[in-house]
Image 1: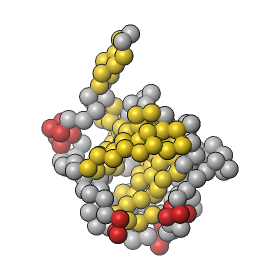
Image 2: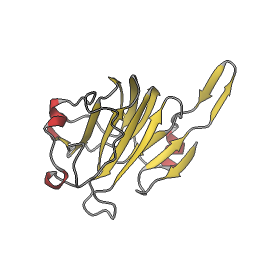
Image 3: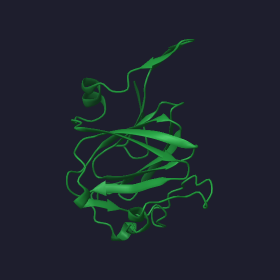
Image 4: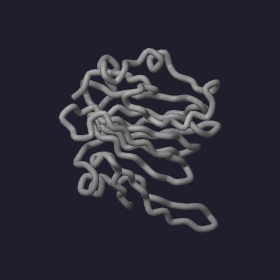
Length: 181
């Protein structure tokens, strides 16, 4: 696997080595010893898998308790994936990084604890898989508005008429009003 640095030093793109021929392909998507040595010395405790239709935007979410690091990838379709640094003491506080993840490019993104995370589905549908370093804790979950002007995230929204948010995300906080770490 290859690691690509981003504009936020703790957020990493991971590109697996793909072995393929006319029959298909094989790739290693995770290996604990390699990940701990090369990316982050963490333990994953929960795997999640979601499917969403085109235009669905999930996020930006983070938890104040049981803070989660996430290793994310797409197994079908494509999403625009975003991480926002919520660590007040960080030199990249309030900065975001976005990347197209797809079944085709097979890239993964490491989103460390202390970051808000979200994604937008750009294809007819997408299946999104992520490993978490702590368990889901709904009582401490925070949602930040995806279109917060302070953050200025450049989402590749295909059509405002297709955009679909949950009630939680519709009622999200503005970045400046959100609790930080």
